[in-house]
Image 1 (tube, each protein chain N blue to C red):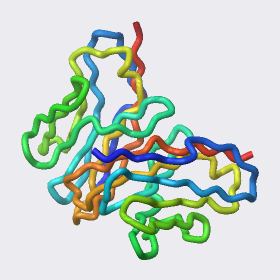
Image 2 (image 1 turned 180 degrees about the vertical axis):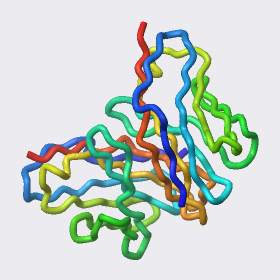
Image 3 (image 1 turned 120 degrees about the vertical axis):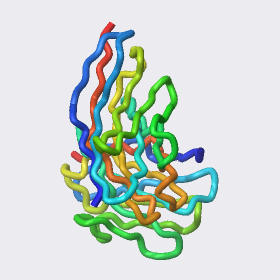
Image 4 (image 1 turned 90 degrees about the vertical axis):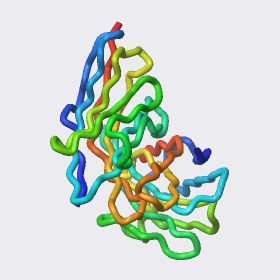
Amino acid sequence: AQSVTQLDSHVSVSEGTPVLLRCNYSSSYSPSLFWYVQHPNKGLQLLLKYTSAATLVKGINGFEAEFKKSETSFHLTKPSAHMSDAAEYFCVVAVSGGYNKLIFGAGTRLAVHP
Amino acid sequence: SAVISQKPSRDICQRGTSLTIQCQVDSQVTMMFWYRQQPGQSLTLIATANQGSEATYESGFVIDKFPISRPNLTFSTLTVSNMSPEDSSIYLCSVGQGNSNQPQHFGDGTRLSIL
């Protein structure tokens, strides 16, 4: 069965410093992995996806993630945090079998300080 | 990506009542899903809304409590029945094309508070 573990429930950074949000996954198959962001009082927005192509995936707003099979990780990074990046971030794995069902991590709340 | 509209965006309801949430998509989609996000929590899948047939519910969710309709490929409703304060959550609709390689896209959610 697939699962995801987000290693940090809260991350706090200063504006202009790098962001690292950690995610480990478990999957018997080659997984499809996603990062979503949820700003306050909003729905979920797709940041990026990994679907067995390039292991380094670039997303919107300067975010990227690297798929590392040997470490079963899919960490999200950004070189320089912006105040507008403050939000909840979810690492997500798709259930294999083509059903398009998703399993969500617990989420990481990112705070960005001036 | 598809544009998804959810109504209402928020509501405050009395316990024992029911509320129907609507999800409208601007294009035909294969899959529609309903999620619950309890306060401070992650998302949990309630059910997959199947066009023309009964919804497929996840463990812990039943049709009597969360009846779902999907009359066509662009519209679905979720009803939260006989509400209690424990039902206070964000309810989100999402859509997908039935392929695990493709992401789901989400509406803005319905913020529901039960008094």
